[in-house]
Length: 493
Image 1: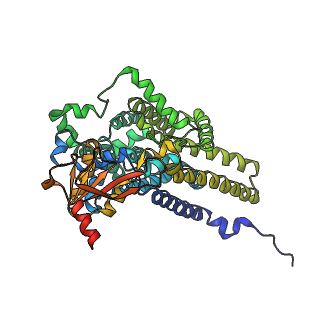
Image 2 (image 1 turned 180 degrees about the vertical axis):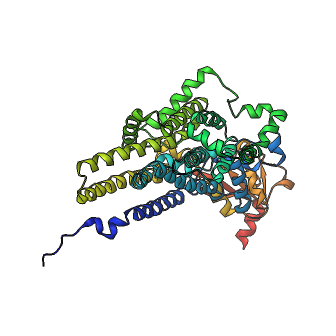
Image 3 (image 1 turned 60 degrees about the vertical axis):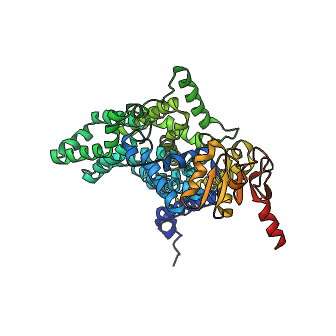
C-alpha cells in the first residue's frame, strides 16, 4: 500500500501555530522586559527623580487646588514609594506594570483590526523596540502616552464592531479612560477626535440604541472622573490651561519642538536619551511602517484609518507644544507596521496560495528577521545606559547604593536642587537631610554622607569611604565621613 505523503497542514505545529506564537510573544516580551529592567534597575534619570518628587507632593486637597496634572500615574507612583520605600524599583514599578498592560492592549488592538498572524508578528516586532522599552523602563508618566491611546482605540473598536451591539461596559470603560486621559497635558484634544467620530453612522446608531438612562450614566461616569478638573476651572484656572497649552508658549518654539520630536524618530545614526532612546525604531521597522503608510492611503476613507490619521495629528500638535510627547507616535506607528506586515504576508501568500511549505519557509524567514531586530534592540537598551556617553551621562546610580549603606541618625548632605528628592528617604529611614555643612562642634553629626564631593573642607570629620560607580569619568557617587573621635575609637578597638 502506497504511503501517503506528509501533510504539514495537518500537523500539530500548524494547527496550533497561533497559540504557539502568542505564547512565544508573551514569554519573549516578559523576558526582555525583565532583562532590560534588571540591567538598569539601579539607574535613575533627572526626569525620574523629578517624577518621584511630584508624586510625593500629591494630596487630596491638591486635586482641587491646581495640583492634578498626571494625577493617575502620580497616585500609583506615590503608593509604590510609600509601600516599598524610596528606591529605583519603587520609582519604576508603575511604568513597568502599565507597560505590560500597554503591550497586551496593543496586541489586542492589532488583533481586532487584522488577523492573528499579523497581530503576533507585529507585536513581536514593535513591542520590544528601543522606543517601547525605553519608555516602559522610565519611572515617568510617559508610559501613559502609550496606554491611553491603546485603550481608547481598543475600546472604540469594540464599540463600532460590526458583528453585534457592544456591551454597555465598553461604553463605561471608554468614558472612564477618556476622563483619566484628561489629566495628561494635551490629551484633552482627544475629545475632538471623539467628537468627529460622531459623524460615523454606526456610532450614531449605537448611541440611539442606548436608553436615555444608560446614556446619562455613561456621561455621568466621564463627568465623575473629571470632577477635580471642573472644580479647578474656578479655583485654579491657570492649571487647567496647562492641559491645553504650555506656560511658555511661543510661535518661535513650535517648529523647533516639532523638529526635535521628528528627529527623535528619524535619528538612525546617533544615540540619545531624551525624550526617548534613539535610534528609537531602527531602519527595518521604519521601512515596514512606510510600507504600511503607502498601503493605507487608498483606504483613507475607512473609519479605522481616519482614526489613525487623527492620532498622528494629535501627535503633531502635542509634540509641537512639547517634544517629549513624541511618545504619542508609538500606537499610530504600531498600526502602520501592522498594515505593512499584512501587505508583505498577503503578497507572499499570493505567490504560493496552496503550497504549505512556502508558508513554512516564509515563517522561518519572519522568525529570523524578527530575532535580528529584537536582539539588536535589546542589546542596545542593555549596553547604551552603561557605555554610550550621550545616554549614560543622563543616569545616576547613587540612590540604591546610598540606601544600602544608610544607618540610623545619618546626616545626608546634598545640593539644593536634589534636596527634595533625597528628603524622601526620611519617609522610611531615620536620617536627616541638609543642604548646609555645620561647623559648630555641637551640631556636627556622628556620620555624614555627602552626595558628591563636599563644597568645602570638613575640619572636624575624617573621610572613611568613597562609594563609586563603574564609570571611568565622574564615578564618585558619595563620600562617607565620621567624626575624628569616632574614627579614633574604631582604631583603638
